[in-house]
Amino acid sequence: MDICLICYEEKPLITVHDSCRYCADCVFGWLYTLAINNKNINGFTLAACPTQSCVQQRIMVSFSSELPDTLKAQLNDIYFRNYVSKTSDLLECPNPSCGRAGFTISSHFGCRTPFECEYCEHQWTHPIIGGSSDSACQRFKTYIVKEFISKRCPHCQTYIIRNDGCNTVYCPGCDKRFPWVSVFRRGWLMLFLLLFTPAFAVLCYFYKDIVDWADENGLIAEIGLWALHVVLFHMCIYFMVRYVATVRICLENYKSMVARGGIILFTAAIPVAGLIGLNYLLQDYYKFWISIGVADLLIGAVVVALVGACFIFISIRQLIELSRGPPQDGISAPLTINDEARIGDNKDIKEVEEYKNGDDIEAHREHEPIKSLH
Image (cartoon, rainbow, N blue to C red; front, side):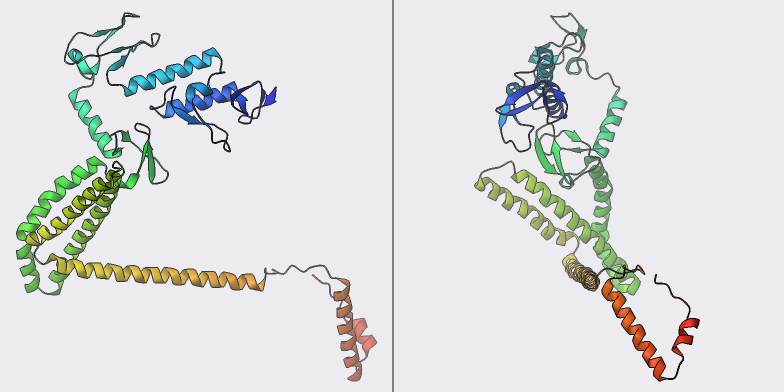
């Protein structure tokens, strides 16, 4: 028996491929985890060797060829369930002891006759014929909660909740990645549109009156008008950033350069046309927005300059401290022979000077307190 390089236990090893050998439990756990975490995996899906330095890729059944039959059966059951969940015309028998599945046909939709498994004779009512067992109110509550706390994959519309981590999210439904910030939580988006749309319509209707009122009422009214445009400008910038991120995801689905060019031109024309049309609703709004944009750039430049200056100051200070060497903190090193000789020479010089001044050297030595080095 050899030592498995995954669990570091001495067990009988099986050959995964070539020279890579692991124990059966580790190979099964690795394949089982891959299949459970990705519904697209089946027995003929390519998988990478668990050895970090190995670049070999084989189909799943090839890796599990030497596993015991009981472990193979468990893996085949997971592959089967993944296949059934991804195939719309297959339904799995809900009887835990059965594990069989059957095909559905178009006449099943709307039919009130329950399904019956021909193998175990178990009968059940599936949502495609009998509807969900939840009430309409409960289904509505579930839908609202999902729309507010989760986001949908832009490729397959699978609901995803992210607890923590980086911005790039992996979707187990379609095996694709997307930036988390590029997707809206649709519940919050709809709530925002429901509140913002009527408020913006009222603002557009009374905008000319608001501008005239601000011109007549002096500084305070002008500040209020500018504050309104500051809010609108930054909301527009925020939605433009999210819009660009969403367009970038859409471009990933097209490989043709012609199609990508057409999408870019079309998506670029939409915000340009919107900004032009906005001038008919909020006349001369661009005068405010240009000033606000320039002010934002200046503020950003000042902030960057201050941060850069602080960083340079801290770096120079650290370099100066490093050049001075580590602080002693009152800790003295042990004296060497040269240090003792130098101290003795200095004491002799002091005694000679005292002798020249007529001092009694011997009396001075007798009354001099003993000093200890610390």
